[in-house]
Length: 135
Image (cartoon, rainbow, N blue to C red; front, side, top):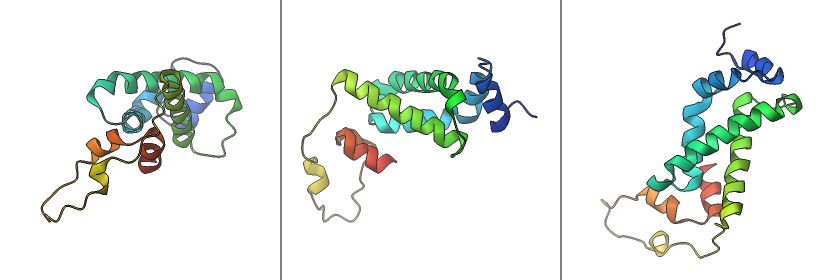
């Protein structure tokens, strides 16, 4: 089996082999980082947090691999672990904003050439709204 195959990596994970983390990072790292960064709000100051979330996700996968039942793909399972890590970070920072949607979302610009800055708008949303949009 190739070392970058999900089933091979899962077998390594279940055996507790820390080398499986390199393979997971190689296969899934970019997409996991993009998801973490999106869930955090696309703010440049949160890039390091997104990297930390990916690392915690991979460590969480190593710890919980024996309980993985295979009812989803390995990537879907990793995304769920990542989402839980992001939620944990938000709870630890008490980053649960309950403010209303930003005024910019409610305005209707008559200019047809106006472009929506999606990243800025995602960053302005509450955690719950941002999660719904990103997922």
